[in-house]
Amino acid sequence: MIKISALQFEYPSGEFRLNILNFEVNRGEKVAVIGPSGSGKTTLLNLVAGIFLPQMGSIRFGDMEVTQLSDTARRDFRITNIGFVFQDFELLDYLNVQDNILHPYRITSALQLNRQVRDRAVALAQEMGIGDKLRRQSTELSHGEKQRTAICRALLPQPKLILADEATGNLDPANKIKILDLLFRSTATHDATLLAVTHDHELLKRFDRVIDFQTFQGGKSV
Amino acid sequence: MKDHLYIAWKYLSYNKAKTATLVGCIVLIAFMPLALELLLNESERQLISRAVETPLVIGAKGSSLDLIMNTLYFGDEVPEVITMAAADRVLESDLAMPIPMYVRFTARNHPIIGTTLDYFDFRNLTLATGEPLTMLGDCILGATTAEDLELGVGDYLVSSPENLFDLAGTYPLKMKIVGVLKKSHTPDDIAVFVDLKTTWIIQGLMHGHQDLWKVEDPTLILDQSDKNITGSPKVYEYSEITEKNIDQFHYHGDPLTAPITAVIAIPFEEKSATLLRGRYLSKDEIYQIVKPEETIDTMFENIFRIKNVLDAVILVVSFGTIAALILVFALSLRLRQREIRTIFMIGCRQLTIVRLIAAEISIVIFLGAFICMVLLMVTGQYDHQLVRLLFIE
Image (cartoon, rainbow over all chains, first blue to last red; front, side, top):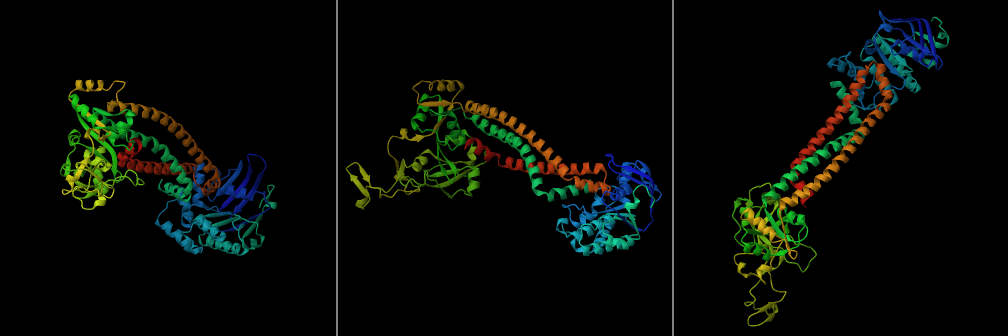
């Protein structure tokens, strides 16, 4: 599903370089990316999402070459194909839970907000256990509820790929397991692929594959 | 665009204090100059038209503006009183018709205008209901007074004492309402018209009491001779004039010494006006004769001079406020960098951010304009009262 080859990326400041010879993730796979801070895990997610463009190399998403897309096309590709789950949830304080879940539909013309989408948002929220909190302001939620809302927002456009950047990093152990369960279950239910950056080593055994960026760095093939 | 407006509205309604401040700033910079313009236009319309219609006013020497404001617009500032001799002098001159005016007292915050029946003809005032003044103690209400006080023909209105703490003052007079005027959209609408003599009764200069020659109680008499009789303070004074007691009302002294505040002089021709004005030019003259149009013109020249300064101040303040609004939005964007980064990561286009900010600015401007419009409508609704409050009272 994702195929990265001969990729070279360097930040404009020149302080960090990422070289990837070959990196593949198959459809439906749940892949964990681990490694020390500053090893390039988040950079990898940004490259896969088309937020960063590499200086060299190829990033293929199915049949699509992401690096060849225009800026607008990459944004449309991202919002329709990729669901982002962030460590700090990144919900909008001024929206309630339902509006936060529907937010991607309101900021792009690539997605159409209609009755079916609204119904799906409600169903998704119920599936995540926050069905009774749809009218609540996001600031009134617990950390666990905020992350469930963020997962709903990522899943609603039915993305093919979910990128989770330390999605369980701010949660207590009990919530970590619950959220990861939900993430696994929902990716499976929605036939999505999961690429997750994590520091939680105790959860790694639940992933199909684990990539350690310490060994991945330096242009080694994974 | 609907979704952008929705998100913008949610943001603005969540940040209520910030939104209220922004909207308040817009309302202020839009409303102030417009309201000022509206009120000045209205005041110009109200004051000038009445001033033009009133040829000459004679009053005590002093502020001509106070004299005009009191005589034409029934302002609170009472000029120094003159006597009926001033009206008599105009009559004697054979150059103009005098209409004496005594504008000093009030009834439930509405000015009582003591005058003659000529005033109604001069101002083309017609009755909506009732009859003209025929008896002492009768009064005719202006249309607005009748509405405000919810009074009509057959009701009574009591004059207000000049000073609540003056224990030796006269009793309020209970006046019978005999007529209500048609609306004229002039200060006459807010007045209570009475005969001049009624105002002297209100002042206590004219009064009615028991016939002292017929009283049986000796404590009511202080002094008595064949021709004169002096009553004690115990004598009951009437606070209402009726058909039964009207004959008991009398004025002590020469009626020419009775007080008035001004005389409206209506010259028989243009030449008469010039001649009449000439008669009041002497250094020893105790009266002043004023052409209201000139006084009001001078006042407006000063007002417009002040308005020009105000306009300049408002312009500078507006620039400052607009700069502050731009700064607020710019700072707000900096504070929302994280939110913007997140929605970029989700896949929003750059233009969407511009649209969201534009939607927020549009809503703030729309709310400001709407509130400004409502305030202007309210100002327009009450412009008559506001002009009176700002320029007359």
